[in-house]
Length: 566
Image (cartoon, rainbow, N blue to C red; front, side, top):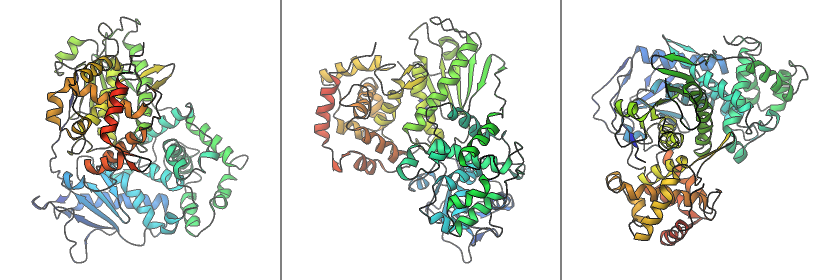
């Protein structure tokens, strides 16, 4: 099945509002700090192009600071200025460790990439820096569960900058709406656990369940700031958050600090607080009614805006356009959860992902889609595009799973595709493993022998038998041009190798002998580590380097056992 992905690899210097720029000739990570520093009342700023903050930019960062102080305290704010470095060179920025999209945080400094999403990067990265500086003892405590800080960061990161002011306490704001819908969805999922239990999680236990725990913590803080109303930040507990943090900074135990707050709900325990929060947020209805826009039916979910062309019909199931839209809404949300789980994505998307489904191939190709494709992701518009293909293969959702993997990475980890470290075999092989998925009941299983595996299994068997596949060492080092020049061989090989790493010795039961290799590859590449460094860390088993020649022999033997799931 042909497919194409359109990705923009360039970076255009952005003119930030009120940011006077020197010529962008400086390619160092930061400019030398001038005597006394440059910045604003509460920020010390460095810039890779020697930019001096202008009035509008200063207004933005000062307004954010004041919003954080108003919500989280203390009354005097952080004792020292917050350190901010602005990066105008993506290549330099991508070399920073542990970046999260357009920002990264080290011990006492926020680094922000000045791309078109720089405002959201400031809003997302700044709260954690502020809380570290405002409450240094609390930030260093090991006995306070992580949800206390991460949940508040999540809440503060849902803010929006509009018309010269910070908006925060409004469920109509995109990221608050996303959080609310995700919270309501989590309530119905098997991932939900009582707050009394999850709020005690730390270490590995917390990391495994972080996404749901942080949603619970976001709901906890939203309730405190706004309940019993639904917005405005004037809730009867609004002032208790700063008091809670101050008490923890003084060294008090969390249970001791929460006790007065819990007494305000009937029953006086976290169990009763959870019930109050559920009752409060389950009643809230975000307007997500389907609508019509010209030739399109449009539906909204927590993470997707989905457009289905009117007149779309599934010839096999007899589903019509509105039914196809309704089915896609729950399937795409389910897919998002699988992406987030597999790639350990714990944050918020900067905006909703978009999906456009044409009613047939003729209309799809007529829109300018790549002529040999079945679906594609356009990084310029951030749109996933496909067509209803029941008259052909009937697995358009599987194709969307593949291309949606690229879309997810581009939105969740901005800049992921813009460096030269991401190997094609892993990007496409991983995406194909999502394309090889199966819906079973109301759950989605990935890395299976269903879906696009129908095209891959026999092909890779034949290529291995004919000796046409490159060695695993050569595949791992292959750049984009040679990979695509032999795409007919390299796509099936890449799928089978990632599938092997995840499943071996089973055919598709997961948790295989080498599954941690896949996890380490994802963790390394998503934060921008160099390819060779990622490979060195990833290709290990029980702390010892994996012999790639032996691994290749095991993979070839495994390929012979593959069979398409009927």
